[in-house]
Length: 115
Image (cartoon, rainbow, N blue to C red; front, side):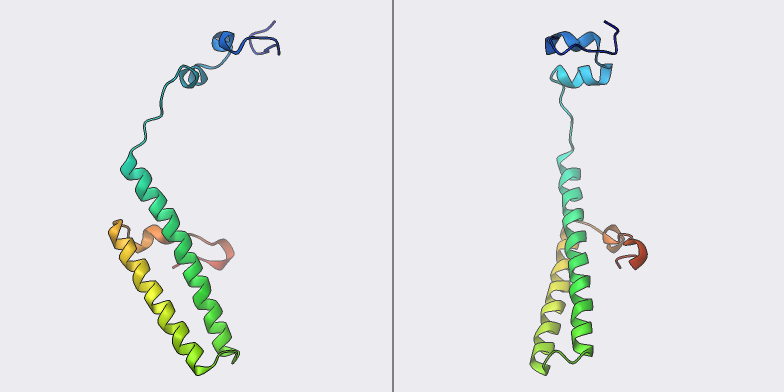
């Protein structure tokens, strides 16, 4: 049998000579070293970016509803206060993780940049 073909009745432990070296390393119990701080910050950046995107979409929707006359003055006031508090909290959490505004600025394609 050629080296690049593996029969279905082959014992997986016998694949060491067939698999590329990088695959052997992982199958031999090697561990991937992860920097916990970088992973934490990466997850925080992703989550904050998604929350920021949702916040921007909510603001645009609120403006559209206000312009169409679909909200009462009281609803506009509550909505404005809520969006302002949400923006302040996003800013606070961004600073806690040491992220800059640019770290959350993703390219939305035809819609342009998020910020």
